[in-house]
Image 1 (cartoon, rainbow, N blue to C red):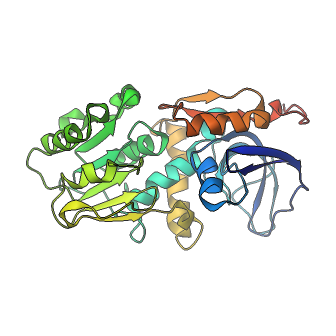
Image 2 (tube, one colour; image 1 turned 180 degrees about the vertical axis):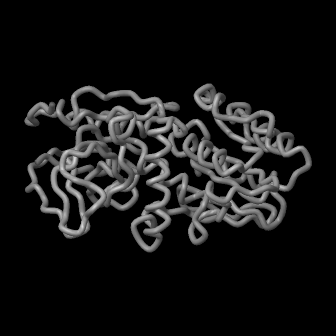
Amino acid sequence: MLEAIVSAGPKVEIVNSPVPTPGPTQVLIKVVVAAANPKDWKVPEWTGKQINTGDDGAGIVEAVGERVSDFRKGDRVAGFHEMGGPSGTYVDFEEASPVPLTAGTAAAGLFEEDGGLGLPLPSSPPYETIPLVIYGASGSVGAFAVQLAKKANIHPLICVAGGGAKTIEHLLDTSKGDTIVDYRKGDEAVTKGIKAALAGKTLKHALDTTAHGSTSVNIAKAMTEGGTIARTLGPEGELPNGVKQFQLSVSTVHSPQQEFGATMFKLFGQGLQQGRLQPRPYEVVRGGLNMLEKALADLKAGKASAVKYVLRIDETDGVDGMS
């Protein structure tokens, strides 16, 4: 099989690797479409180490371990490495491939008790009002956070977005105070916009999916003491008003939060099947893995606004076409 090895730059090397044999509880997937994520260029740059990319993918089950009962060879699935929720036949591979990592990150940030904001789950929606700020709401993680929070009856949703705002407008419930704040108007306008949307309510929870520069500071200025911001990247300094911040980690859905992960990923599969969870807009980067380096460079340059880059593996040089 072919494997894409990413180093700082970003630079990508395509190498031949042996096909792995799944362990007792593992699933081997023949990937049809892989999604590119910002962390794919950030991790090699920050750590100085090479990584093999492709945490997000959709394809067909090739083999299953002896203790696997939920999947069988030939199933159409989407997965976040150690297997996530099935995409079945109700969405295209291109639509399914970005779901596992991005929706999983949103769910972990919103609902996990340890490592997340600990908000009420969709299965136990609150009756009281719980304002929530989602910064970067038109990005993949942010847009899934909007949908999951709405399903959990968390309102008002104060969504900070820019040019991609139109892609999430239809997801909001304005009757419950959901609104969009345009970050392009500047830092001061963002804080004022959040405060105006709160209409006197207390803000205690925020999910910062941008997590860069002044984003968390803008949120914290609208919070009262004791508020908490979950960030997709590590803290960059102390925040005003005694606001707490932490970096969330989606990897906990594998361990130690396996039960939470299993519950959420089944919810994703059901949501896609029933049309209650909407996939994000995507752009196919033609040329398969041969064009991964360009895709990551474009991600680094900020060229992907409210769209997910995906790559069809069968367009890679040296890969046989897939039926």
